[in-house]
Image (cartoon, rainbow, N blue to C red; front, side, top):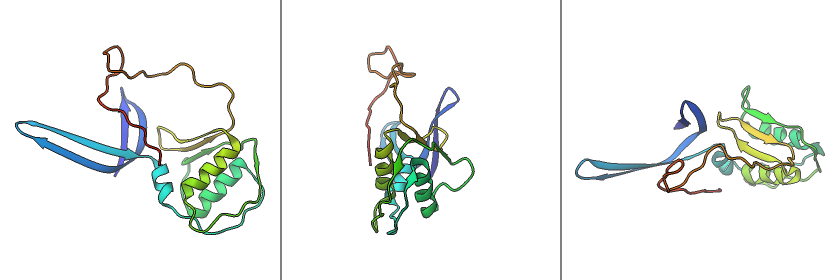
Length: 155
C-alpha cells in the first residue's frame, strides 16, 4: 500500500506500508504501529540475473542495472548524476540482490544514494561538505519535535 508522510503540508517520505499492527485496549484506547519502507526494501527482494558489464561511468552503470530489472522506468522516477567514477567491467553474480549491487556501485562513487521525499531514486556524486545545520530536531525534553520511539533500520 503506497504511503506518504507529510508535515505542515510538505512531504517528508514516500514509500509503502510493510506491516500494520493494531493494539486495542479497553476502554477507548488503542494504538496502531505502521512500518513503512521506501523502494530500497523492494530492491532488496529483486534478484539479478548473471550478466557481464562493460566499463561505465557511475551514472551509466546505475541506469543500466535498473534498466536490466525494469525498475523505475517511468519519467521522473530517477535523478542520477553522471558521477566522477568509472566503474570497471565486473560481472554480476546470479541471484545477487539489486540493493546489494546498487550499494557496491555507490561505494565506487562515495556520493549519496536515496529515495527522495517525492519518491524519486536519487544518486548524487561525491560531496565535500557535510550537512551541518539540521532542519528538524527531535527530542523528548519538550524543546523540539516530540517523539515516542525512534528506530533506524537498514535492510
